[in-house]
Length: 75
Ligand code: TRP
Image (cartoon, rainbow, N blue to C red):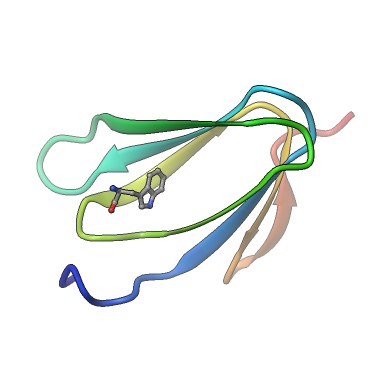
């Protein structure tokens, strides 16, 4: 994936304070490279990029991807 090429987008909507959206590196090593904290109601739109191949979400959130919509946890 080239840097200027758009990868898939996803949307995370925090359902509580302190939700983390953690970017994991692309390539041989899979490690954390960015952690973004969202408070309740905050929405983050992000893409998979040349640097980011996976994303881990901690906390209660709604996640929308090209595969559909899901919640990280049920009440
Ligand atoms: N600098 C990161 C990148 O270009 C920014 C980023 C993109 C990111 N998508 C993300 C960070 C998803 C966390 C989660 O890859």
